Length: 251
Image 1 (tube, rainbow, N blue to C red):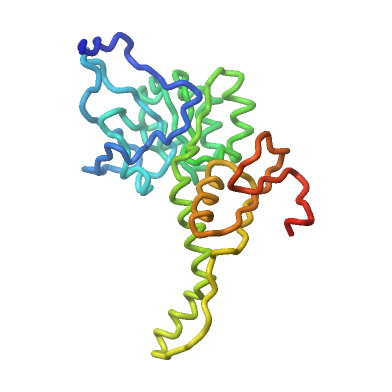
Image 2 (cartoon, rainbow, N blue to C red):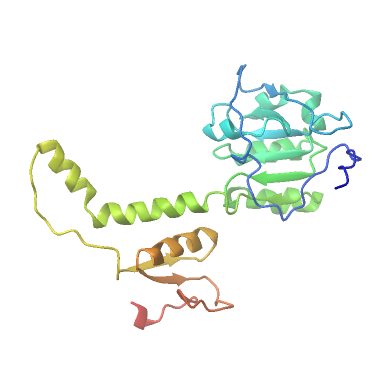
């Protein structure tokens, strides 16, 4: 096969439809030599032409566990949890082309960073979680007029949250708290444990997370009913998907 062409553009930014988390566990590296929340992490250059990796502003505290999986060989991360720590990066902040907002960093920090012109070269903004409601106003009032796309972490946590939902269902159905109490008291308590098979799993919304939960629920033999805020555009042979009004027959 033909060799890959040299890097013709200094930095190539992903399109706005990118939804996976920028800090993906794939190719993860451990943090070394932490020097505080305002440090920049430097690693090898990724373009064969010798161009430095892109700079990404990360609105987060440096001790956030999510940063332990940062792809340090792909970008230089300028980390800060408030405006003061971010401004300490100096000219690097003005040259940064991408921005990652990691909750619980206050949304006003993101707004001030953009509105006050501290990061004029930013061409892409990414929300770490799937939900971007806390920065929705910033997206409408700041990002959209500036033509800066906003992506989110849709799908990055769906499997984990689906497993958590089924763990909770099993926790209560199997009365785990009661079993733990019996163990502490060294008591043999005979009681009937219910099963998930045949029970109804209700989901409010049917996005990516809910669909992952539904698949696990079906694997346990549960009846899955999904309520969508809008009339469903297509039916599912596996799940009962209803629109804004729940049919009384489903209750």
